[in-house]
Length: 402
Image (cartoon, rainbow, N blue to C red; front, side, top):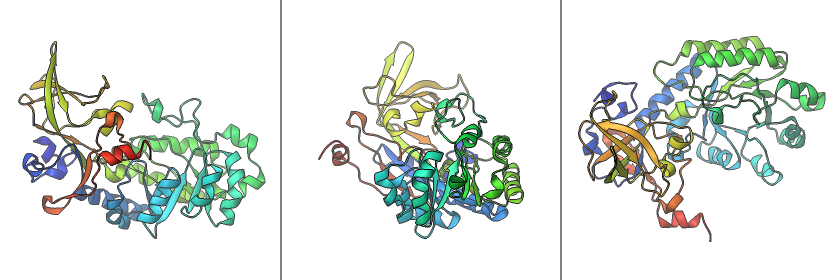
């Protein structure tokens, strides 16, 4: 299969295995995290840091399976968190590494606890910088402010575009000029921007030009610049030379340390969701394979982005094979993964293996309809499978009451 021989493919980590045989005894649905692919991604990120002097953080919002933090820790400067719990997770599970946190709005009741875990704290507004910044400084933390360069490089994904009109993310230059004063500026050590989503480095270059135009006079006063996430660094074909040029330009022009906080790039193509067909139904010309895995519950980005995940063995060209709609078992009419075609008709019990399922899955899944959460498994050297979790009824019930 091309999926197994193409090193750029989401199933390349299974090369040398017969997936049907490898996963034959695996209870489904199940997430499988590919340790070998994580190592490959980690080495690429570490090599980038070595060549440019940048510091790479794991954005836990995309991948927070902490059993693998010891594996990734040697390649990373630390973790990035979106709030208190992720900050604590990074401090506990990647000890000795940096913990950075950005939240669109901090609360009084959590900020004091956050100071126990975070090294860098980034604020979303000058008002919150004034409110919480003095406490952060007193605790010895490095403080930053998220800026909005008002430079959108995305099309068709407004929900993931921090520079969309009316965005709540970051301080525009107009707001900076209106609200910033010497006392607030004195609290700042760095600036942060995050504008990309699964994009190449040409979009970063465009964004960095906008950042320089809007905030270039401020940056020489800063100690660091965090360029956020959304960089598809470990995707084959990604333009590393342009990324490295952006990093070097920032370091040399403004004298700042540069941080990147990719999430997807750390775990890209490093996971699978194994499922099986439980029934096949027909409606008109459509043949629909009902799976034991749900798009709504187990891979919510499929519906939210929307996103079409790769499927092992599916026909690559339109019009080939036997068409099937892959769907989940929940009551949601739209619990549909997508339309695919296969070399032979699907039947009850067949394995359906989705790729690139390490990211935005285990950290976003849910138990709508009382759907069980898939257990998480580690795929280690030699095809060894190790169960890492045992979810069940109590996992579902415990979220709903005492």
